[in-house]
Length: 453
Image (cartoon, rainbow, N blue to C red; front, side, top):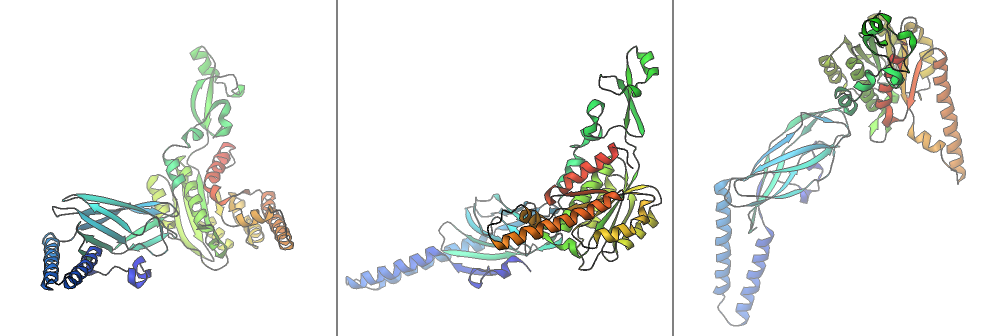
């Protein structure tokens, strides 16, 4: 369903029609007044009739001028993909073939549920020129969405007639997860942290398993990394620079169960998890690791085998862009057994899920032995914003006291679940929803820095 069908009937654009303009009504009103005045002062009524005939001739000339050069030519242009929750520009190009300016009112049939900054756009298109209108939409859901027809009302400067028509420009657009952090990774924002060295390397990737190169020694370098052979050859102290091992395996488990459908603001928890999982994939691929992805609810929904490079990242994006939560409990055991079957080599397994799930810690602890013998496991969860607000509440009423007490109890239960996982050797990350993508990148860097994998 497109937007025009939701408009009240008097405001809907018809597909093809001629309408009287406001100036025509004004001229007709003037004609009636002129006729009455002529009749009142004793002049012949034919003077009023002549006025209306002249008006009819002017209207007919305007009709012929519009018909002669046809309607304004309209096209819609946008990016190949739109991003969830972001302001995406949509451009409407209008070409006026007539040798006089045309005033246009434009309405576009956008997908139902989209938010936009302007619904009705008015513009004057100069003679025999092309003008572009721009409006912005904010998609509310990932996947494919259909734009419908473009409706245009056009009139000449005199404004006696309005030509109304609809251009069939129906097209499907794909709404992808937010890719801001993916672009930052691909643009080299984290490259300095990935290649950091020397005394400040603890802020990025530090000493690892692979030799990188030799450089001059600086005072805060560790003496044990001095390369004495290079020192003798150069005649000054030189030190080895190491980097974390490349070509390791990273596996992403993406929970698509019932609890991931809960909305935190405009986005669901699954939306946030997908955004963070893609950022995690991007930084791992940028580092040279091989990344696989398994999406699951009660059963496996998607499986992307391990791969590397930009084409593989695009495959992952395509695989997850339209994932929706299933209203069933998450089957952790099924997901872990499937992953264990495919991953024989030691890997970093990042589980994107939700810690408010009552069975989260219990099930995970029960089944963690399936993977933990061979793999490093990391859980990625988000804080509940409403829970945090209630917890920080300063009660003024009895009801608020209960809200605060319940929030504190639930927060403690979440912390207990996460602490139970930590005691089992699981790396845990639990942050605010809007910070998840950034923090998961830094967690990956920290794991590589500490050579935990």
